[in-house]
Amino acid sequence: MIAPLIADLTVLVDDVDSVKIAFEEGSLTTLKIVIGAILFGIALDTRLEDFALALRRPGTIAIGVIAQFLLLPALTFGLTLLLDVRGSVALGMILVACCPPGNVSNILTHRARGDVALSVSMTAVGNVLAIFLMPLNVAFWGALHPTGKEVLEDIELSAVDMLVEIGLVIGIPFAAGIAIARLWPAIASRAGKVVGPVAFLGLGAVIVVGVANNWSIFVDHIGVVVLAVFAHDALALLLGYGIARATRLPPASTKAMTFEVGIRNAGLGLLLVFTYFDGLGGMALVAAWWGIWDIIAGLAVAQWWRHRSRSDSPAERALA
Figure 1 (cartoon, one colour):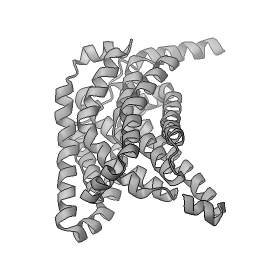
Figure 2 (cartoon, helix red, strand yellow; figure 1 turned 120 degrees about the horizontal axis):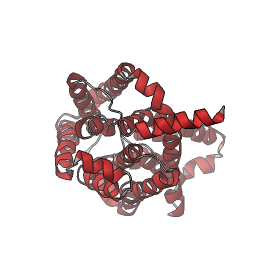
Figure 3 (cartoon, rainbow, N blue to C red; figure 1 turned 60 degrees about the vertical axis):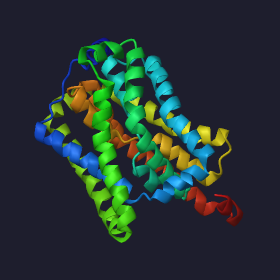
């Protein structure tokens, strides 16, 4: 009884590297617009003063940058080896780990009663750095992976091409949003309340349509990535929390650091999967499931922190 199930699972694991998830050209264009809108929404809520704030807290920002762009990809690489996942799943996990944070991290930090100013500053800095560091990280760690490098060789990934794509998707919307926020702050404030939520609804719709159009593939192979995404997401959140505690950040800053490191813009990862990896099954499944589970896990952590803050003494709340 058990042997056939194990055999079936082995077949699925082997097949996931060769599965291609169909994504129409129109849907890919829509996804690019949605991701650009998400980054535009982040920028509308960002002020140049946020970068000035980051310069006044260089140590804390540096901790976040090291955790996001050095430690998380490295630990993710180790996790893929520990779990012994297939090449496409490993590349999906590495790609997500290299993605920048999104403004979901700001929302969760606010809900957890954390340091929102720090969260916004780290999001702004992280997205700017990701333009340059993300393609380098993906190419570096992917090329080192024993099974992932074979997939990369077949795809012939160009870090320069990815840099250009990320620059277009992140850089242009981000620069435009910051310019509008600087020149017309009242308009940016009103627009920011609409653009962000609408863009995330659009991303959800694109994912739902993509899953519906590839339902049989999703059902057959989702079990291969569920455990990996659960472990990976927990690792990212624990890394943010652990490095904040190790460097003795205040409680409110610890909450911000947890979400800035733990929450990744998986939508951007999904876009890159379909742009450069031809909808490779394991990568697409990891990015899609991460985008769903990451928010669920983040909300659970934020709600727990919020509940705890209600029972804290006034002195403890002041420290937070």
